Image 1 (cartoon, one colour):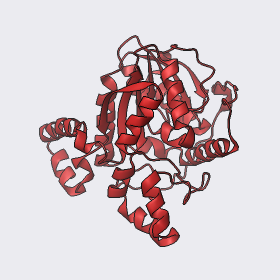
Image 2 (image 1 turned 45 degrees about the vertical axis):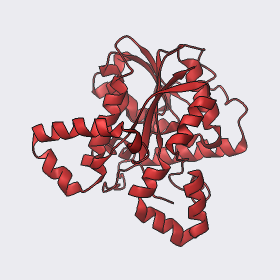
Image 3 (image 1 turned 90 degrees about the vertical axis):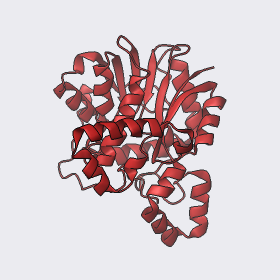
Image 4 (image 1 turned 60 degrees about the horizontal axis):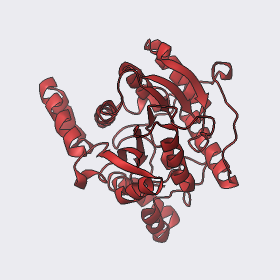
Length: 317
């Protein structure tokens, strides 16, 4: 596969020796079945759950253990702050171990926190509690992005789906986005991110070469055309996702009955030379200015496809 292993280029992914176990009794699991599930989708969900259960603590470390990851976190954080305000009630999908849950509560929002992985939910509850933010969380729930029937129309002021939940919905991404738009109040924002086909091809080239050598040039051509890694990385065998080009994402939003409010790449210059980043980071004032430039550049139309992830905000038409 293209080694879309959740880590920005240049960031290590050392094995987590202290894998955390879940505590189901502390997690609310509402057992509504997915709407018209298919065997393929059920298999994909099981594969995603197994991957993130095993990934465990490393998902917390992903945006912190390299400068490129720290820049990506800052871009995500500032983008989120444009659409979430104090007093909002927010549904967080694919919340992972809680970095953005903490940000949401820091903005004054109240949240229902969900993830498909019980291990990630347990980590989320732990980190959010340690940060003193647990009172702002109504509950933690196991949930699949394609299984939101338990929530009422317009129940939330905003929905946040960072970390690529729509990329794990595969052929049901359009339905999943319709559901995200359904549960948010009219005009309320859905703030999400997906993996980028073009950006991953550019920045994860060693993984592209590995794929070509293992599966052949034709397989790589199909992945580049579709963004779908399932042909070369079946669910349950590693990190499998559906990547998007920016025009495809716009079409997805439009077909789901929404409109794009804003968009951003997750990184731009920060995916370049790590040594240059270290020199910038050594001077706090210079680093702050660099972050300002990076956030602005990531929103340039010509940059949206240029990073490993694409961020977007959408609302119903």
